[in-house]
Image (cartoon, rainbow, N blue to C red; front, side, top):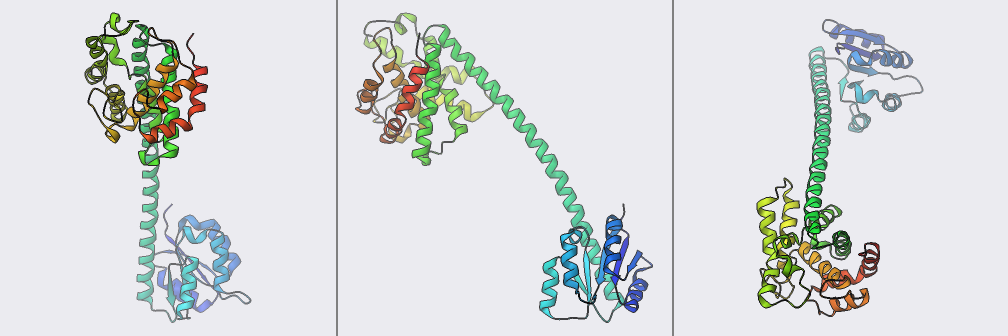
Length: 365
Protein backbone atom coordinates (compact mmCIF):
# COMPACT_ATOMS: atom_id res chain seq x y z
CA UNK A 1 0.00 0.00 0.00
CA UNK A 2 1.45 3.42 -0.98
CA UNK A 3 2.13 5.89 1.82
CA UNK A 4 0.34 8.86 0.25
CA UNK A 5 -1.55 10.34 3.21
CA UNK A 6 -0.80 12.91 5.90
CA UNK A 7 -2.52 12.82 9.26
CA UNK A 8 -2.89 16.25 10.91
CA UNK A 9 -3.63 16.04 14.62
CA UNK A 10 -4.29 19.68 15.58
CA UNK A 11 -6.90 20.92 18.06
CA UNK A 12 -6.66 24.51 16.79
CA UNK A 13 -9.11 24.85 13.87
CA UNK A 14 -7.27 27.75 12.21
CA UNK A 15 -3.88 26.02 12.32
CA UNK A 16 -5.37 22.79 11.06
CA UNK A 17 -7.00 24.59 8.12
CA UNK A 18 -3.67 26.26 7.16
CA UNK A 19 -1.87 22.91 7.18
CA UNK A 20 -4.56 21.29 5.06
CA UNK A 21 -4.20 24.08 2.49
CA UNK A 22 -0.41 23.61 2.34
CA UNK A 23 -0.54 19.87 1.61
CA UNK A 24 -3.90 19.10 0.01
CA UNK A 25 -2.60 19.40 -3.55
CA UNK A 26 0.04 16.70 -3.05
CA UNK A 27 -1.29 14.34 -0.36
CA UNK A 28 -4.51 12.84 0.90
CA UNK A 29 -5.31 14.64 4.13
CA UNK A 30 -6.75 13.14 7.29
CA UNK A 31 -7.51 15.97 9.75
CA UNK A 32 -8.36 15.25 13.38
CA UNK A 33 -8.88 17.55 16.35
CA UNK A 34 -8.92 15.11 19.30
CA UNK A 35 -6.58 12.51 20.71
CA UNK A 36 -9.20 9.75 20.74
CA UNK A 37 -10.08 10.23 17.07
CA UNK A 38 -6.40 10.41 16.22
CA UNK A 39 -5.69 7.02 17.78
CA UNK A 40 -8.53 5.42 15.83
CA UNK A 41 -7.27 6.89 12.54
CA UNK A 42 -3.71 5.76 13.32
CA UNK A 43 -4.91 2.22 13.92
CA UNK A 44 -6.97 2.18 10.72
CA UNK A 45 -4.64 4.00 8.31
CA UNK A 46 -1.11 3.45 9.68
CA UNK A 47 -0.01 1.59 6.54
CA UNK A 48 -0.94 4.49 4.23
CA UNK A 49 0.42 7.35 6.33
CA UNK A 50 3.56 9.09 5.05
CA UNK A 51 3.85 11.43 8.05
CA UNK A 52 1.92 12.69 11.09
CA UNK A 53 1.82 16.38 12.04
CA UNK A 54 0.50 16.87 15.54
CA UNK A 55 -0.16 19.49 18.18
CA UNK A 56 -2.62 18.31 20.80
CA UNK A 57 -2.37 20.71 23.72
CA UNK A 58 -5.36 19.08 25.38
CA UNK A 59 -6.52 20.45 28.77
CA UNK A 60 -4.99 18.47 31.64
CA UNK A 61 -2.53 16.89 29.17
CA UNK A 62 0.40 17.95 27.04
CA UNK A 63 2.17 16.80 23.89
CA UNK A 64 4.62 14.67 25.85
CA UNK A 65 1.88 12.72 27.58
CA UNK A 66 0.42 12.03 24.15
CA UNK A 67 3.88 11.10 22.84
CA UNK A 68 4.36 8.71 25.74
CA UNK A 69 1.14 6.91 24.84
CA UNK A 70 1.98 6.85 21.10
CA UNK A 71 5.43 5.48 21.89
CA UNK A 72 3.98 2.70 24.03
CA UNK A 73 1.70 1.72 21.15
CA UNK A 74 4.77 1.58 18.79
CA UNK A 75 3.38 4.20 16.38
CA UNK A 76 6.53 6.33 16.53
CA UNK A 77 8.67 3.54 15.07
CA UNK A 78 6.30 2.89 12.15
CA UNK A 79 5.51 6.46 11.04
CA UNK A 80 7.54 9.71 11.21
CA UNK A 81 5.98 12.24 13.62
CA UNK A 82 6.58 16.00 13.35
CA UNK A 83 5.53 18.14 16.31
CA UNK A 84 3.85 21.52 15.79
CA UNK A 85 4.96 24.00 18.46
CA UNK A 86 5.63 27.61 19.32
CA UNK A 87 8.02 26.64 22.12
CA UNK A 88 11.64 27.30 21.11
CA UNK A 89 13.55 26.07 24.15
CA UNK A 90 16.28 23.48 23.67
CA UNK A 91 14.99 21.39 26.59
CA UNK A 92 11.57 21.14 24.96
CA UNK A 93 13.10 20.00 21.66
CA UNK A 94 15.39 17.51 23.37
CA UNK A 95 12.48 15.90 25.19
CA UNK A 96 10.52 15.44 21.94
CA UNK A 97 13.48 13.85 20.16
CA UNK A 98 13.96 11.53 23.11
CA UNK A 99 10.46 10.16 22.61
CA UNK A 100 11.11 9.63 18.90
CA UNK A 101 9.74 12.56 16.90
CA UNK A 102 11.81 13.38 13.82
CA UNK A 103 11.42 17.17 13.61
CA UNK A 104 9.44 20.30 14.59
CA UNK A 105 7.18 22.76 12.72
CA UNK A 106 7.35 26.27 14.19
CA UNK A 107 4.48 28.67 14.46
CA UNK A 108 3.73 30.94 12.71
CA UNK A 109 3.75 28.69 9.60
CA UNK A 110 5.96 29.35 6.56
CA UNK A 111 4.41 27.17 3.80
CA UNK A 112 7.52 26.71 1.63
CA UNK A 113 9.69 25.79 4.62
CA UNK A 114 7.08 23.35 5.95
CA UNK A 115 6.63 21.71 2.53
CA UNK A 116 10.36 21.15 2.16
CA UNK A 117 10.70 19.87 5.71
CA UNK A 118 7.87 17.35 5.31
CA UNK A 119 9.12 16.19 1.90
CA UNK A 120 12.60 15.65 3.34
CA UNK A 121 11.28 13.75 6.37
CA UNK A 122 9.10 11.51 4.20
CA UNK A 123 11.94 10.80 1.77
CA UNK A 124 14.42 9.95 4.52
CA UNK A 125 11.95 7.82 6.44
CA UNK A 126 10.90 5.89 3.35
CA UNK A 127 14.54 5.34 2.44
CA UNK A 128 15.17 4.11 5.98
CA UNK A 129 12.19 1.77 5.76
CA UNK A 130 13.33 0.39 2.40
CA UNK A 131 16.86 -0.01 3.73
CA UNK A 132 15.60 -1.89 6.78
CA UNK A 133 13.49 -4.14 4.56
CA UNK A 134 16.50 -4.79 2.32
CA UNK A 135 18.71 -5.54 5.30
CA UNK A 136 16.07 -7.88 6.69
CA UNK A 137 15.77 -9.69 3.35
CA UNK A 138 19.55 -9.95 3.00
CA UNK A 139 19.84 -11.14 6.60
CA UNK A 140 17.30 -13.87 5.93
CA UNK A 141 19.20 -14.88 2.79
CA UNK A 142 22.49 -14.95 4.69
CA UNK A 143 20.84 -16.95 7.46
CA UNK A 144 19.63 -19.52 4.93
CA UNK A 145 23.03 -19.58 3.23
CA UNK A 146 24.76 -20.04 6.60
CA UNK A 147 22.38 -22.86 7.45
CA UNK A 148 23.16 -24.48 4.10
CA UNK A 149 26.92 -24.04 4.64
CA UNK A 150 26.57 -25.46 8.13
CA UNK A 151 24.68 -28.44 6.72
CA UNK A 152 27.36 -28.95 4.05
CA UNK A 153 30.09 -28.63 6.68
CA UNK A 154 28.35 -31.22 8.85
CA UNK A 155 28.04 -33.51 5.85
CA UNK A 156 31.72 -33.02 4.98
CA UNK A 157 32.67 -33.61 8.59
CA UNK A 158 30.69 -36.84 8.60
CA UNK A 159 32.37 -37.96 5.36
CA UNK A 160 35.80 -37.16 6.86
CA UNK A 161 34.97 -39.18 9.96
CA UNK A 162 33.73 -42.10 7.86
CA UNK A 163 36.97 -41.99 5.84
CA UNK A 164 39.14 -41.90 8.94
CA UNK A 165 37.10 -44.65 10.56
CA UNK A 166 37.44 -46.81 7.47
CA UNK A 167 41.21 -46.30 7.30
CA UNK A 168 41.59 -47.12 10.98
CA UNK A 169 39.76 -50.37 10.26
CA UNK A 170 42.48 -51.19 7.72
CA UNK A 171 45.04 -51.10 10.53
CA UNK A 172 42.79 -53.19 12.75
CA UNK A 173 42.12 -55.69 9.93
CA UNK A 174 45.83 -56.50 9.72
CA UNK A 175 45.72 -57.27 13.46
CA UNK A 176 48.20 -54.51 14.08
CA UNK A 177 45.93 -52.87 16.63
CA UNK A 178 42.67 -53.88 18.31
CA UNK A 179 39.40 -52.00 17.95
CA UNK A 180 39.55 -51.29 21.68
CA UNK A 181 43.01 -49.75 21.24
CA UNK A 182 41.55 -47.32 18.69
CA UNK A 183 38.72 -46.38 21.04
CA UNK A 184 41.11 -45.88 23.93
CA UNK A 185 43.50 -43.70 21.93
CA UNK A 186 40.63 -41.50 20.78
CA UNK A 187 39.12 -41.25 24.27
CA UNK A 188 42.52 -40.65 25.94
CA UNK A 189 43.36 -37.91 23.43
CA UNK A 190 40.12 -36.02 24.03
CA UNK A 191 40.39 -36.51 27.80
CA UNK A 192 43.98 -35.22 28.00
CA UNK A 193 43.10 -32.42 25.58
CA UNK A 194 40.28 -31.24 27.84
CA UNK A 195 42.63 -31.18 30.82
CA UNK A 196 45.13 -29.09 28.82
CA UNK A 197 42.36 -26.81 27.58
CA UNK A 198 41.31 -26.15 31.19
CA UNK A 199 44.81 -25.64 32.60
CA UNK A 200 46.57 -23.97 29.65
CA UNK A 201 44.25 -21.81 27.50
CA UNK A 202 47.31 -20.46 25.67
CA UNK A 203 47.25 -23.57 23.46
CA UNK A 204 43.93 -22.39 22.00
CA UNK A 205 42.24 -25.78 22.26
CA UNK A 206 38.45 -25.93 21.91
CA UNK A 207 35.89 -28.72 22.05
CA UNK A 208 35.70 -28.59 18.25
CA UNK A 209 39.47 -28.93 17.88
CA UNK A 210 39.57 -31.75 20.43
CA UNK A 211 36.96 -33.64 18.45
CA UNK A 212 39.12 -33.33 15.32
CA UNK A 213 42.25 -34.38 17.27
CA UNK A 214 40.32 -37.39 18.58
CA UNK A 215 39.47 -38.50 15.04
CA UNK A 216 42.96 -37.72 13.75
CA UNK A 217 44.50 -39.83 16.52
CA UNK A 218 42.91 -42.95 14.97
CA UNK A 219 45.42 -42.73 12.12
CA UNK A 220 48.52 -42.12 14.21
CA UNK A 221 49.90 -45.57 13.24
CA UNK A 222 48.56 -45.72 9.68
CA UNK A 223 52.16 -46.10 8.47
CA UNK A 224 52.39 -49.53 10.14
CA UNK A 225 50.32 -51.04 7.34
CA UNK A 226 53.47 -51.06 5.19
CA UNK A 227 55.72 -52.55 7.89
CA UNK A 228 56.29 -56.32 7.38
CA UNK A 229 54.37 -58.61 9.74
CA UNK A 230 57.52 -60.46 10.80
CA UNK A 231 58.79 -57.20 12.31
CA UNK A 232 55.53 -55.69 13.57
CA UNK A 233 54.51 -58.95 15.30
CA UNK A 234 57.95 -60.04 16.48
CA UNK A 235 57.85 -61.31 20.05
CA UNK A 236 61.55 -60.95 20.77
CA UNK A 237 63.85 -57.97 20.84
CA UNK A 238 64.18 -56.08 17.57
CA UNK A 239 67.52 -55.74 15.87
CA UNK A 240 68.86 -52.28 15.16
CA UNK A 241 67.81 -52.53 11.51
CA UNK A 242 64.36 -53.82 12.43
CA UNK A 243 63.92 -50.94 14.88
CA UNK A 244 64.80 -48.45 12.15
CA UNK A 245 62.13 -50.02 9.93
CA UNK A 246 59.58 -49.77 12.76
CA UNK A 247 60.48 -46.11 13.26
CA UNK A 248 59.82 -45.45 9.58
CA UNK A 249 56.06 -45.93 10.16
CA UNK A 250 55.92 -42.21 11.07
CA UNK A 251 57.26 -40.99 7.74
CA UNK A 252 55.48 -43.76 5.83
CA UNK A 253 52.24 -42.74 7.50
CA UNK A 254 52.78 -39.11 6.53
CA UNK A 255 53.43 -40.20 2.93
CA UNK A 256 50.24 -42.28 2.84
CA UNK A 257 48.23 -39.34 4.13
CA UNK A 258 49.89 -36.91 1.73
CA UNK A 259 49.40 -39.09 -1.37
CA UNK A 260 46.21 -41.04 -0.72
CA UNK A 261 43.98 -39.08 1.65
CA UNK A 262 42.06 -36.18 0.15
CA UNK A 263 40.14 -34.00 2.61
CA UNK A 264 38.47 -30.66 1.92
CA UNK A 265 38.89 -29.75 5.58
CA UNK A 266 42.49 -28.44 5.81
CA UNK A 267 42.48 -28.37 9.61
CA UNK A 268 41.43 -32.03 9.72
CA UNK A 269 44.11 -32.96 7.16
CA UNK A 270 46.84 -31.00 8.98
CA UNK A 271 46.06 -32.70 12.30
CA UNK A 272 46.11 -36.17 10.71
CA UNK A 273 49.42 -35.54 8.92
CA UNK A 274 51.09 -33.91 11.93
CA UNK A 275 50.01 -36.60 14.40
CA UNK A 276 51.02 -39.48 12.10
CA UNK A 277 54.48 -37.98 11.54
CA UNK A 278 55.26 -36.53 14.97
CA UNK A 279 53.61 -38.70 17.64
CA UNK A 280 57.02 -40.21 18.50
CA UNK A 281 58.81 -36.87 18.93
CA UNK A 282 59.99 -36.17 22.49
CA UNK A 283 60.12 -32.91 24.40
CA UNK A 284 63.90 -33.15 24.91
CA UNK A 285 64.55 -33.64 21.18
CA UNK A 286 65.36 -37.36 21.45
CA UNK A 287 62.34 -38.54 19.49
CA UNK A 288 61.88 -39.26 15.79
CA UNK A 289 61.62 -38.80 12.81
CA UNK A 290 62.53 -35.07 12.84
CA UNK A 291 64.11 -34.66 16.26
CA UNK A 292 61.72 -31.84 17.18
CA UNK A 293 62.24 -30.26 20.58
CA UNK A 294 59.96 -28.51 23.09
CA UNK A 295 57.05 -26.51 21.74
CA UNK A 296 58.20 -27.12 18.17
CA UNK A 297 56.12 -30.27 18.63
CA UNK A 298 52.46 -29.37 18.17
CA UNK A 299 50.21 -29.84 21.19
CA UNK A 300 48.15 -32.36 19.19
CA UNK A 301 51.22 -34.53 18.52
CA UNK A 302 52.31 -34.18 22.17
CA UNK A 303 48.89 -35.37 23.32
CA UNK A 304 48.84 -38.45 21.08
CA UNK A 305 52.47 -39.20 21.95
CA UNK A 306 51.68 -39.47 25.66
CA UNK A 307 48.42 -41.38 25.31
CA UNK A 308 50.05 -43.83 22.86
CA UNK A 309 52.76 -44.57 25.43
CA UNK A 310 50.21 -44.94 28.23
CA UNK A 311 48.11 -47.34 26.17
CA UNK A 312 51.18 -49.37 25.19
CA UNK A 313 52.16 -49.69 28.86
CA UNK A 314 48.69 -50.68 30.10
CA UNK A 315 48.02 -53.15 27.24
CA UNK A 316 49.33 -56.67 26.64
CA UNK A 317 51.62 -56.87 23.63
CA UNK A 318 53.34 -59.82 21.93
CA UNK A 319 56.59 -58.81 23.61
CA UNK A 320 55.28 -57.94 27.11
CA UNK A 321 52.49 -58.20 29.67
CA UNK A 322 50.29 -55.21 30.59
CA UNK A 323 51.45 -52.94 33.40
CA UNK A 324 48.97 -51.73 36.02
CA UNK A 325 47.62 -48.22 35.57
CA UNK A 326 49.54 -47.12 38.68
CA UNK A 327 52.83 -48.48 37.31
CA UNK A 328 52.20 -46.95 33.87
CA UNK A 329 51.42 -43.57 35.45
CA UNK A 330 54.61 -43.59 37.50
CA UNK A 331 56.76 -44.64 34.53
CA UNK A 332 55.47 -41.72 32.46
CA UNK A 333 55.79 -39.18 35.29
CA UNK A 334 59.32 -40.39 36.09
CA UNK A 335 60.45 -40.13 32.47
CA UNK A 336 61.02 -43.88 31.99
CA UNK A 337 59.09 -43.76 28.70
CA UNK A 338 60.61 -40.60 27.27
CA UNK A 339 60.48 -36.94 28.23
CA UNK A 340 57.18 -35.06 28.10
CA UNK A 341 56.57 -31.38 28.81
CA UNK A 342 55.85 -30.33 32.43
CA UNK A 343 52.51 -28.89 31.27
CA UNK A 344 51.53 -32.17 29.62
CA UNK A 345 52.46 -34.13 32.75
CA UNK A 346 50.45 -31.76 34.94
CA UNK A 347 47.40 -32.17 32.69
CA UNK A 348 47.95 -35.95 32.64
CA UNK A 349 48.08 -36.02 36.45
CA UNK A 350 44.82 -34.07 36.63
CA UNK A 351 43.16 -36.54 34.23
CA UNK A 352 44.63 -39.69 35.82
CA UNK A 353 41.36 -41.06 37.21
CA UNK A 354 39.54 -40.49 33.91
CA UNK A 355 42.30 -42.41 32.11
CA UNK A 356 41.77 -45.37 34.45
CA UNK A 357 38.03 -45.32 33.73
CA UNK A 358 38.76 -45.41 29.98
CA UNK A 359 41.13 -48.38 30.44
CA UNK A 360 38.37 -50.37 32.16
CA UNK A 361 35.69 -49.29 29.71
CA UNK A 362 37.62 -50.32 26.60
CA UNK A 363 39.68 -53.21 27.93
CA UNK A 364 40.88 -55.84 25.42
CA UNK A 365 39.11 -59.19 25.41
